[in-house]
Amino acid sequence: VLDKHSNKNSKITDEYRLGKVLGKGAFGTVYLAEDGAKQAFACKSISKAKLITEEDVKDVRREVEVLNLVSDHANVAALQATYEDAQHVHMVLELCRGGELFDRIISKGTFTEKTAAEYFRTMVEVVHHLHQLGVMHRDIKPENFLLTTPGDDAVLKLCDFGLSAYWRPGQKLSSVVGSSYYVSPEVLRRSYSVEADIWSLGVMLYILLSGLPPFWGDTEEDIFRMVLKGETDFKTAPWPSISVAAKDCVRKLLTMDPKLRPTAQQILEHPWLKEQGAAPDRPL
Ligand code: ADP
Ligand code: MG
Image (cartoon, rainbow, N blue to C red):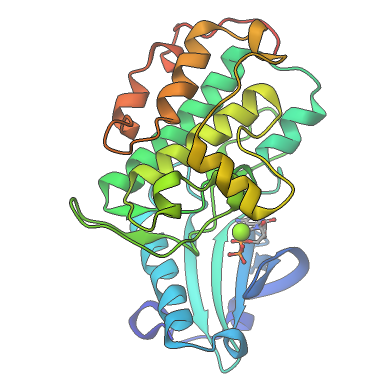
């Protein structure tokens, strides 16, 4: 599957001891892994038996390639090594033992708009980095932002590049991928580019600030109908107590027309996201 990217001279079990299961996805399992020096990693092991089509194989290859391309960013769960044996492709990744960002926030009870803005800025920065390198993530959602440690020193890391794609200016993609709450109207219309990640960031920010998804429904069709309508509720609690600047930021991210939507770079200039900016230091 991987040819030039895999570690040919050794087996994963020569270098790492695989431990408990950290998570499961469609194609594989993520294990805790320890190297000879007792340093801990995560190992995403993809079962080759589940790679049925040539497209599945290409997706895994692309995931590894993209990880190699973006792993130097401080907020990416970096790829350390790859291995391949008869049954599996293994990706050894930087370990995130702090769980998902949103779970942390919920467990803390309250947090301030300022804290939300700091975390969100990091999310936009890493997406900006990907976009500059010609990569779109296509699965931007809270579950894919993990924290490195359970402590206050935790660093936020983007993970799961399994749906990522290359993009070039002017080029449009058409395959509908991603998770229904976060999917943009242009993805549903099957003609989209990198702006779709910005929409997903908007959905995330809406949830981060209010605890509720902006577009929801009992079925996937209902959710998609809401997305295509694009009406966002800023009237119901807690929105009245959220700053004008925060709402403006969410509104801009959730611009229906992808051509009018701000880029990651432009969003980084938004007053709400600036250091010492417009995000008030009051609990959400
Ligand atoms: P899939 O592409 O199958 O969705 P993911 O890359 O999202 O796989 O990994 C599945 C789960 O494994 C994640 O939701 C998370 O709980 C866990 N996981 C993935 N990467 C790491 C990591 N670097 N550190 C800790 N846990 C991880
Ligand atoms: Mg995943």
